[in-house]
Image (cartoon, rainbow over all chains, first blue to last red; front, top):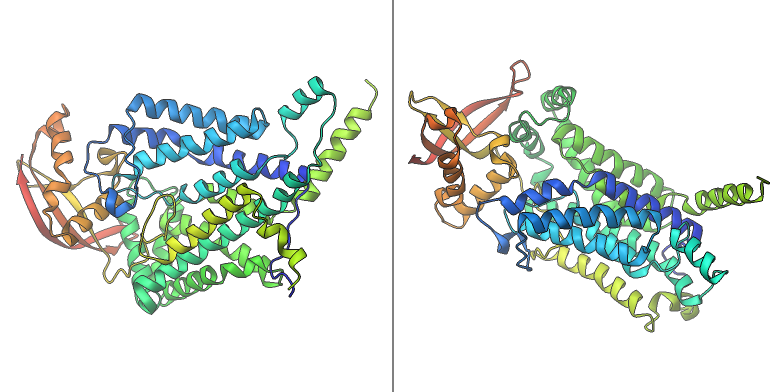
Length: 303
Length: 152
């Protein structure tokens, strides 16, 4: 039997570029300062509804420390300085900040999918290159042994599990809509009504006045919201197809990205941290090799 | 089945691979159920059908009887979106929505802002909205239903 998924064997340089991109997107797009303010929140909790099984209560000062730990450790993860501990601290600090915030009636769609991805990086990345660690090790030991077969195997597993998780989160978004609403999510004014209520919910916090005009324009066109709702569910349900090397893959990936941009424009929900989940579809090996060649060329140049 | 080909994926000796695979599988299994376990999500927020463009919120009523919807700035770090969810959940559970907004009352009492001092009562309301691109705000309130009210 032919293994159905395309094998994605990232070399150490590809993995290194992946790590830099992944944690850079997380550092730039996640706002830990907003999460820290939930420690001062005096409202009711709804832990059982939200599904936070950990009763984490951080004081404001503890949350501030977590936010700084998150920023510093994510930066270290990008640089590859104390890489593995840095990735674990980055994952744990964001996890604690979110768990502290999520016990209130607050469900953060923006950064929830990052937790599993960050956990996989911390767990499975043992040999990505472009690390300051490697330079330090090279200075001390004199040579680098990157050919350990067990760690090289993780170069396949890490991108593959991230790709599977990517398809799961999108598939479940579509599946949940069908499960909770059935066909009425598409064949009714549901999306139109959501767009109208979003105008009220985000009042004075719209990303741009232009987006509000586009929102109002889309609502007024008959059947357009139904078409958009149908397309959304279709793309989300089709997301697992990206695991297979077919002609559809590129189009599904582009459509998923366009859908999230569309959600930002029409519903003012920013999914920028999700950009990190897309990196495993980029030609990381090629980019890694090209940067490696540049570095080698610079090394060979006489000063 | 070519076991050699899939063996690296099933390698039981690598505990890291096992844990990673288990976490990804768990996210799929929990997502397929009604359970919501952090950090695994089934993304239910906009999954329900919005039969009408309606939203639950809170209004401040001043001494002249004029009402004003609570703004996102006052609610920070919460927002109108999550306040709607919070009130909706309380109503579904058969609880008084006033319990859900008691923190808002506390904030009004503890705030020294002169405008907030003029507030005489706080209402939990349900708005029926419509789009209105011509106005300053892109929505208009078509209908308002007062769910509950409490004097300050």
